[in-house]
Length: 284
Image (tube, rainbow, N blue to C red; front, side):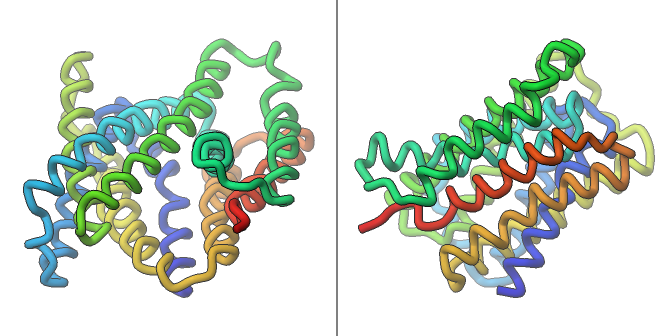
């Protein structure tokens, strides 16, 4: 459980590092995934599992990498437009989307926590971004839309990853490394197509990218991947709730995000809904 908690705290800094990198969203994504993917390869090599990266794994990783590319493309833009805290809250709505898919398409039975979480999330989102929608600048509105679309893309990524892992007998970290490296190529191509510079402008950007790639992406997700296997589902949901919660706190502390009581109330409802949606999503 300790490793899972540390991993959740570590990845809560991911959106902060994206903001501090102060580089085009897709370029940041390229460095994050390319260097992070290499970091995962190093972890696999140290564990003696590098041979698990077979051609079969790379082939199935293509599917998940497509959705993961869309996720980061949207989420990184949302971070720049609405801030790290709000963007992370919005993309974590994926928990509820996954629960909805399990009910609508996988025919899982609905649990009471899930029934409560949906209207709670909608009310929370309305308080966070709906009440003041007309007052937001167009850029902020786009950021909210990007954040919610990121949640959809992330849901598709997780579903495709689960499907791919069911087709390939491999260490989940091997698949994650392959997905990261393939996605880095996609994001690098997008950045180049837009004419973005890949030159790291200063020390702050270099340190932020390094922390984002090696600490948040490699170590953070390694700890979560390992820890999630030995912790109860209800505890996993509660612990991973640290990510959006702490990201919001870091946004308040590091970027002087204005404190709005209505937004805070909405955010609290969304967090509670995310937790309810992440536990006991199915009843037998």
